[in-house]
Length: 454
Image (cartoon, rainbow, N blue to C red; front, top):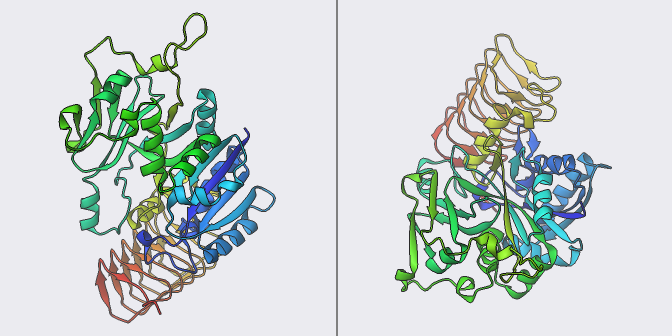
């Protein structure tokens, strides 16, 4: 399809501390014992999108990610690894590699997206409309679009009070308004409403961080708006506002001019808000693209911002928080197990002791051993782990090369690689960073345990 694909893989995300480290950057975080980046690359391969630039934050992380890709997708994908500085944002990352972008259209995908929506469907929609940008929208996951933070209750409660407000034309093809992280009310300029004529407001959809851009438009925006750092918060809203070629839309209405705004409430997280202007004489948004009988444009034509809305039955979640990490690992061994490749529950050569039980929705890694009378429920055990007797793991993720002593109880926790839990440790809703040693008999609840950085 002559698309150049950019995968924004990230690096050492602060939202995922202590799960990520210099030895385990975010793209290699395991989801059901497979790096999260694998899920995106597999979907791209299935859509025959094989010319990729994978952008990684930090030189060291880029080397690790590049080595893994070379060993996993050899002769299957053409991948160029590009290292960029940390904390420059998604728009900054694209700006840093813009000299590598040569195709007519660019498909940008977040490397932490775990989805069964084919990227080729977004690319086809983009080409069909000859759009400046096409963004993929999907249903908000059950646990909520947690953009940051841990699995702790306070953070989750705080985040669940924020919403996305998305405005669509009646045909649900054009993106007319987007506002993210709205806490109470969104204000939309009346001039925008009168310009577009009809707009359907949605709070049940989220930006999935998959975009198709016309390269010329993307590069122009990155050049002239050199302070833009985020695709979601800067570039996309700018293109949406500017598609009507009006200075009133390019510049936000000052806060003092409240009379010129319409308020849209998002309270109670109502799933669907619809607004159709009473003024029937106002031309619809489609009028911007209509033609007179002689072929001339009846209204000044500008660029199009389009959407591809994934089916409500699709799976589409970003691994951008510890809670999301737990949710995705649970999902891909449960209702979304079609994403697993290969779809086997127990890896080759695990050794299980007598009366040890492994329940459904579990996954055991290669070379791991478990003692007698252990119970594993809705949990994932990594590779080459040594687990003693009378150990109970529920709703947890244990990474590779972990040693767990006799009588340990692990519930709702993440145990990173090379951790040692001595005998009779009890953990509930905890995260234990790589290489940490938890002493015998210790009990922790809702704690983050990690080595102090030197």
